[in-house]
Image 1 (cartoon, rainbow, N blue to C red):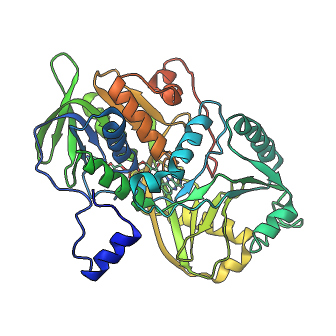
Image 2: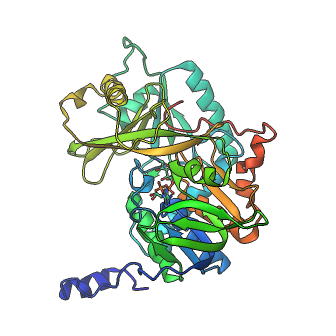
Image 3: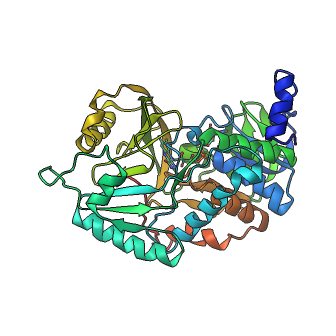
Length: 416
Ligand SMILES: Cc1cc2nc3c(=O)[nH]c(=O)nc-3n(C[C@H](O)[C@H](O)[C@H](O)COP(=O)(O)OP(=O)(O)OC[C@H]3O[C@@H](n4cnc5c(N)ncnc54)[C@H](O)[C@@H]3O)c2cc1C
């Protein structure tokens, strides 16, 4: 793999950047692989990379119906954090943040990782109780969460002038999660793709899986695609909001529902916010990108759907919440808005699991799954290689739904 460095940039500048190798190949599609990964999003590509790197499994193809990184991996608001609620969840996210911290170096790809910290704005006492409980659990697993006063919030975020004592929901406290970060989302997909390709993994874009196939003994045998059948010893479904569409082709019902989550950005402005601001009681969060745009998100649309745009009422709710807390933003022009299809499990915890069909694995339920990409790929690769879960994902197995052994999480920015 051609290394990216200051010197290679300078050298290639002399030849008008015509000397760069392609970041990944476009090989011919074979009719058999040891492992097929469906979905070239963050989780699929990370899984392929760790399969090759940690388990020396390289006869692997990642099959993508659109273009690499065209799904939620490049549609999210790039917040990385580990402020979750349950003993089962926090160690997983702590691991993911740690992997992210070294990922630019490991992949030799500039992910523009920036440790910003996140401030939760607390406006109700039940939320404060919940969040303090979270602080104590997180402390056990080495993730930081620290309460700060209202004065300190206003010092750190000067543009937060709403939420005063006379307002509808006065701000009563803040919590700082200093491990939180942002990073360039599509670079995560490209970085993993390039390093996986370098280790022999094949990536096939414009290849849509129409159905999963089984052999006579019930095992998974491969997939039917728009380019014909492909057989495989093991298949992993890593398609985000479209998981159930594929698993129903082999009559596998999963406890997942698909929802639309959307976001929007403002025109670029001078630097005004250097942390991620999360307002869970109002249902809005925002940060400022390196280009100066405010990146703003709200709660998912509560109605199930596969839409990838933004519903006007959801947009209005998020804007109203933002203006209550940041009234000066009323003059900002909004530039772009978009959405993505997420699947959410009944307990709001991801599913990374074997299934009842031997050889078939699923990684799903990632409604805050950008932050989880490194640990999600790392642990799914372990599961595929060993057919046994890594201890970090033992609680995320499908078995939990057989025994009502839920991992009830609300560790997300906006409550559902
Ligand atoms: C608006 C929005 C904001 C978000 N903000 C955050 C955030 O701040 N922090 C955070 O941690 N998470 C966030 N998320 C969630 C995060 O983006 C997702 O959980 C995560 O990206 C999902 O994993 P993925 O990257 O593998 O999915 P994707 O990138 O969606 O990958 C799945 C791929 O599968 C492909 N596919 C689907 N069906 C088929 C098929 N039949 N055949 C072949 N390929 C198929 C798709 O085309 C897609 O490329 C946000 C999501 C959205 C929509």
